[in-house]
Image (cartoon, rainbow, N blue to C red; front, side, top):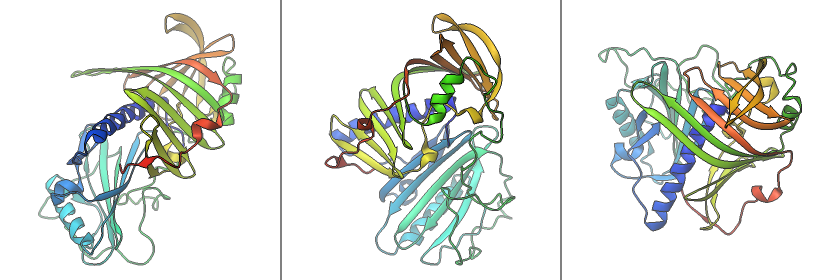
Length: 375
């Protein structure tokens, strides 16, 4: 349910992209892109396959640990859904995707999965196609793993292997049967909290975790992150506010323009209050942008001290089931910062400017008179 600390970088980068896209859109509508991008992977869109845009009614991206899911919903009138999806399937095949399940494009509804290896070592891309008389849904899953590519002469393109009895699997529902590697599975439960030890032995952060575990707080963060490899050095910095209360979550970023994103009542609302514009998408708690982890998701390592943000603080150190290290810096019982170090060596520092055990109702309010933009 909770994103590991390092992944908040991705959330903020996406937020900046959303703001830039809105600025462009307020001046004049622009064509949708030809590729979905998940990290360094570029996946062809329906627009690229068809040569024309279809009406998008919802885009939902979730990040849970090392798994990223992007779900795009299209509303299509008429009876060309199966033809559209067949053309899209052929486009994906040209892009290197192989058939992971049988797909039937002859009826009024159908579902199937294709896949290929990611450009990132140790990852794979699975893409599920679902269509019916209302429209179609494309669900892209990037996760650790690998797909054994068949020889093209042996590979089945499509047939009638999908049974019409029962509901097709969805990436937002429960996962498929154990051992079934040919379906796009749910991210539910794949969040790094698989029976790890709680933080009861930690002394510095005992009262801090009581607030975090309560589910209500406000945290103002100045975040910086840095990563490098043989080809590129990357750094990013941003200040933002996180609010949690009664199962609701809100993030406020002021970059180029103010953006407020709220998760509540099963939906994601992204509001640009200065322009009285917002987007609305289906969403669940799996979309959480909470930047901390609850105590039962961490294993306590020990206590030490080091320099953080120009000062020396004591810290409690933890790890999670993915091997990411977290250091919570404390001074006089006050949380001053959190540093995460992922197994690849990337470091994210969050200087905590405000940490309080309450959140105002106003940040979760959804206006009724804003113009709604389609994502």
